[in-house]
Image (cartoon, rainbow over all chains, first blue to last red; front, top):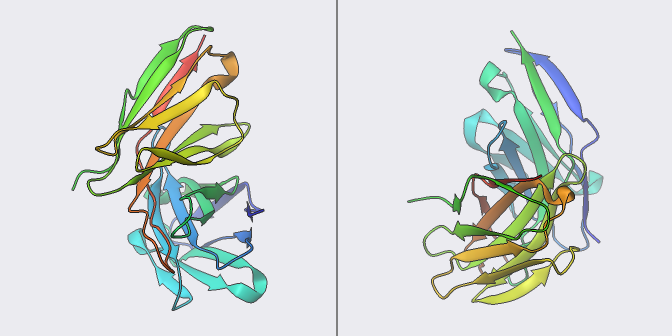
Length: 115
Length: 116
Protein backbone atom coordinates (compact mmCIF):
# COMPACT_ATOMS: atom_id res chain seq x y z
CA UNK A 1 0.00 0.00 0.00
CA UNK A 2 1.19 3.47 -0.76
CA UNK A 3 1.90 5.92 2.03
CA UNK A 4 3.42 9.33 2.63
CA UNK A 5 5.16 10.61 5.74
CA UNK A 6 5.70 14.25 6.53
CA UNK A 7 7.73 14.16 9.73
CA UNK A 8 7.35 17.83 10.60
CA UNK A 9 3.90 18.86 11.76
CA UNK A 10 4.82 22.50 12.24
CA UNK A 11 7.79 24.60 11.09
CA UNK A 12 8.57 28.22 11.84
CA UNK A 13 11.03 30.18 9.72
CA UNK A 14 11.95 33.83 9.49
CA UNK A 15 11.07 35.77 6.37
CA UNK A 16 13.99 35.61 3.98
CA UNK A 17 15.34 32.36 5.42
CA UNK A 18 15.54 29.17 3.42
CA UNK A 19 13.00 26.40 3.78
CA UNK A 20 13.00 22.64 3.42
CA UNK A 21 9.91 20.53 4.04
CA UNK A 22 10.46 16.81 4.25
CA UNK A 23 8.46 14.09 2.55
CA UNK A 24 9.07 10.35 2.47
CA UNK A 25 6.94 8.00 0.44
CA UNK A 26 6.25 4.32 0.04
CA UNK A 27 4.97 3.22 -3.35
CA UNK A 28 5.21 -0.12 -5.10
CA UNK A 29 5.74 1.19 -8.61
CA UNK A 30 7.18 4.29 -10.23
CA UNK A 31 6.09 7.07 -7.89
CA UNK A 32 4.23 10.08 -9.15
CA UNK A 33 4.77 12.77 -6.54
CA UNK A 34 3.08 16.07 -5.83
CA UNK A 35 3.31 19.00 -3.48
CA UNK A 36 0.19 21.03 -2.76
CA UNK A 37 -0.31 24.13 -0.63
CA UNK A 38 -3.44 25.05 1.26
CA UNK A 39 -4.15 28.46 2.71
CA UNK A 40 -6.70 28.71 5.53
CA UNK A 41 -10.21 28.08 4.29
CA UNK A 42 -9.04 27.31 0.78
CA UNK A 43 -8.64 24.30 -1.47
CA UNK A 44 -5.38 22.72 -2.57
CA UNK A 45 -3.11 24.48 -5.03
CA UNK A 46 -0.60 22.44 -6.97
CA UNK A 47 2.97 23.64 -6.40
CA UNK A 48 4.83 21.08 -8.46
CA UNK A 49 4.91 17.47 -9.54
CA UNK A 50 7.40 14.77 -10.43
CA UNK A 51 6.59 12.11 -12.98
CA UNK A 52 9.94 11.23 -14.52
CA UNK A 53 13.14 12.72 -15.90
CA UNK A 54 15.10 15.41 -14.13
CA UNK A 55 14.96 14.72 -10.42
CA UNK A 56 14.99 18.42 -9.53
CA UNK A 57 11.64 19.94 -10.43
CA UNK A 58 10.67 23.56 -10.40
CA UNK A 59 7.27 24.77 -9.36
CA UNK A 60 5.32 27.91 -8.86
CA UNK A 61 6.10 30.64 -6.33
CA UNK A 62 9.82 29.86 -6.39
CA UNK A 63 9.50 26.36 -4.94
CA UNK A 64 11.50 23.36 -6.06
CA UNK A 65 11.64 19.73 -5.01
CA UNK A 66 14.18 16.98 -5.44
CA UNK A 67 13.25 13.35 -6.00
CA UNK A 68 15.69 10.91 -4.40
CA UNK A 69 14.73 7.35 -5.16
CA UNK A 70 17.43 5.86 -2.90
CA UNK A 71 15.99 7.74 0.07
CA UNK A 72 12.33 7.53 -0.99
CA UNK A 73 12.15 11.25 -0.49
CA UNK A 74 10.69 14.23 -2.27
CA UNK A 75 11.63 17.27 -0.19
CA UNK A 76 10.31 20.71 -0.98
CA UNK A 77 12.65 23.71 -0.85
CA UNK A 78 12.58 27.44 -1.24
CA UNK A 79 15.69 29.64 -0.98
CA UNK A 80 13.97 32.66 0.56
CA UNK A 81 10.60 32.47 2.26
CA UNK A 82 8.05 35.27 2.03
CA UNK A 83 5.41 35.99 4.66
CA UNK A 84 2.74 35.00 2.13
CA UNK A 85 4.14 31.44 2.09
CA UNK A 86 2.58 30.78 5.49
CA UNK A 87 0.16 27.91 4.84
CA UNK A 88 -0.13 24.16 5.12
CA UNK A 89 1.86 22.02 2.71
CA UNK A 90 0.91 18.52 1.64
CA UNK A 91 3.00 15.92 -0.12
CA UNK A 92 1.12 13.27 -2.08
CA UNK A 93 1.85 10.15 -4.11
CA UNK A 94 -0.23 8.50 -6.79
CA UNK A 95 -2.02 9.54 -9.92
CA UNK A 96 -0.54 6.90 -12.20
CA UNK A 97 -1.90 7.01 -15.71
CA UNK A 98 -4.18 4.22 -16.76
CA UNK A 99 -5.27 3.61 -13.21
CA UNK A 100 -7.44 5.48 -10.80
CA UNK A 101 -6.29 9.02 -10.18
CA UNK A 102 -6.07 8.39 -6.47
CA UNK A 103 -3.69 10.37 -4.32
CA UNK A 104 -2.42 9.39 -0.90
CA UNK A 105 -1.52 12.41 1.18
CA UNK A 106 0.79 13.02 4.06
CA UNK A 107 -0.52 14.65 7.21
CA UNK A 108 0.77 18.03 6.17
CA UNK A 109 3.30 20.54 7.49
CA UNK A 110 2.07 23.87 8.75
CA UNK A 111 4.51 26.65 7.92
CA UNK A 112 4.62 29.76 10.04
CA UNK A 113 6.69 32.73 8.84
CA UNK A 114 7.93 35.29 11.31
CA UNK A 115 8.73 38.81 10.23
CA UNK B 1 -9.49 28.23 -18.51
CA UNK B 2 -11.74 27.83 -15.50
CA UNK B 3 -10.57 25.65 -12.67
CA UNK B 4 -12.44 23.02 -10.75
CA UNK B 5 -15.67 24.53 -9.49
CA UNK B 6 -17.50 23.27 -6.45
CA UNK B 7 -20.91 24.27 -5.14
CA UNK B 8 -22.07 25.11 -2.61
CA UNK B 9 -19.04 26.48 -0.79
CA UNK B 10 -20.60 26.39 2.64
CA UNK B 11 -23.58 24.58 4.06
CA UNK B 12 -25.03 23.56 7.39
CA UNK B 13 -27.14 20.44 7.75
CA UNK B 14 -28.84 18.65 10.61
CA UNK B 15 -28.04 15.12 11.71
CA UNK B 16 -30.05 12.59 9.74
CA UNK B 17 -30.45 14.80 6.69
CA UNK B 18 -28.77 14.18 3.39
CA UNK B 19 -26.60 16.48 1.29
CA UNK B 20 -25.56 16.71 -2.34
CA UNK B 21 -22.38 18.46 -3.42
CA UNK B 22 -21.58 19.38 -6.98
CA UNK B 23 -18.33 19.56 -8.92
CA UNK B 24 -17.56 20.85 -12.41
CA UNK B 25 -14.13 19.67 -13.59
CA UNK B 26 -11.70 21.58 -15.73
CA UNK B 27 -12.85 21.54 -19.34
CA UNK B 28 -11.62 18.39 -21.07
CA UNK B 29 -10.91 16.51 -17.85
CA UNK B 30 -12.60 13.15 -17.73
CA UNK B 31 -11.71 12.00 -14.25
CA UNK B 32 -13.29 13.44 -11.14
CA UNK B 33 -12.36 12.33 -7.66
CA UNK B 34 -13.56 13.34 -4.22
CA UNK B 35 -11.68 13.73 -0.96
CA UNK B 36 -12.71 14.40 2.61
CA UNK B 37 -10.52 16.58 4.80
CA UNK B 38 -10.91 16.66 8.57
CA UNK B 39 -8.52 17.80 11.32
CA UNK B 40 -8.40 14.29 12.77
CA UNK B 41 -8.13 12.12 9.67
CA UNK B 42 -6.51 14.50 7.22
CA UNK B 43 -7.13 14.12 3.51
CA UNK B 44 -8.84 10.88 2.59
CA UNK B 45 -9.85 9.60 -0.81
CA UNK B 46 -13.58 8.95 -1.22
CA UNK B 47 -14.01 7.78 -4.80
CA UNK B 48 -13.16 8.50 -8.42
CA UNK B 49 -15.36 8.63 -11.47
CA UNK B 50 -14.28 8.24 -15.04
CA UNK B 51 -16.63 8.11 -18.02
CA UNK B 52 -19.62 8.00 -15.70
CA UNK B 53 -18.29 4.89 -13.91
CA UNK B 54 -16.88 4.64 -10.44
CA UNK B 55 -13.32 3.50 -10.99
CA UNK B 56 -12.03 3.38 -7.45
CA UNK B 57 -13.46 3.73 -3.98
CA UNK B 58 -11.96 4.61 -0.63
CA UNK B 59 -12.79 3.23 2.76
CA UNK B 60 -16.03 5.03 3.51
CA UNK B 61 -19.47 3.67 4.40
CA UNK B 62 -22.19 3.26 1.82
CA UNK B 63 -23.81 6.50 3.00
CA UNK B 64 -21.27 8.21 0.78
CA UNK B 65 -22.06 7.90 -2.90
CA UNK B 66 -21.44 9.74 -6.09
CA UNK B 67 -22.11 9.88 -9.76
CA UNK B 68 -20.77 11.44 -12.89
CA UNK B 69 -22.72 12.82 -15.80
CA UNK B 70 -21.95 12.62 -19.49
CA UNK B 71 -20.43 16.12 -19.40
CA UNK B 72 -18.01 14.92 -16.67
CA UNK B 73 -19.69 16.96 -13.96
CA UNK B 74 -19.99 15.04 -10.74
CA UNK B 75 -22.06 15.00 -7.61
CA UNK B 76 -21.49 13.33 -4.30
CA UNK B 77 -24.20 12.53 -1.83
CA UNK B 78 -24.05 11.79 1.86
CA UNK B 79 -27.17 10.31 3.39
CA UNK B 80 -28.17 10.11 7.05
CA UNK B 81 -25.63 12.71 8.08
CA UNK B 82 -23.63 12.24 11.25
CA UNK B 83 -21.75 14.85 13.26
CA UNK B 84 -18.50 13.24 12.14
CA UNK B 85 -19.29 14.02 8.51
CA UNK B 86 -18.49 17.66 9.17
CA UNK B 87 -15.54 18.29 6.89
CA UNK B 88 -14.17 20.04 3.87
CA UNK B 89 -15.07 18.02 0.78
CA UNK B 90 -12.67 18.52 -2.07
CA UNK B 91 -13.22 17.66 -5.68
CA UNK B 92 -10.33 17.08 -8.04
CA UNK B 93 -10.11 16.55 -11.77
CA UNK B 94 -7.55 15.23 -14.20
CA UNK B 95 -7.22 14.36 -17.86
CA UNK B 96 -6.95 10.66 -16.95
CA UNK B 97 -4.19 10.02 -19.45
CA UNK B 98 -3.24 6.50 -20.37
CA UNK B 99 0.21 5.14 -20.95
CA UNK B 100 3.38 5.54 -19.00
CA UNK B 101 2.79 8.95 -17.51
CA UNK B 102 1.34 10.56 -14.48
CA UNK B 103 -1.89 12.49 -14.23
CA UNK B 104 -1.76 16.05 -12.98
CA UNK B 105 -4.58 16.41 -10.49
CA UNK B 106 -6.18 19.77 -9.80
CA UNK B 107 -8.38 20.58 -6.85
CA UNK B 108 -11.30 22.89 -6.32
CA UNK B 109 -11.85 25.25 -3.39
CA UNK B 110 -13.97 22.70 -1.58
CA UNK B 111 -17.37 22.57 0.06
CA UNK B 112 -17.46 23.15 3.80
CA UNK B 113 -20.10 20.95 5.39
CA UNK B 114 -21.12 21.44 9.00
CA UNK B 115 -23.48 18.91 10.56
CA UNK B 116 -25.29 20.06 13.70
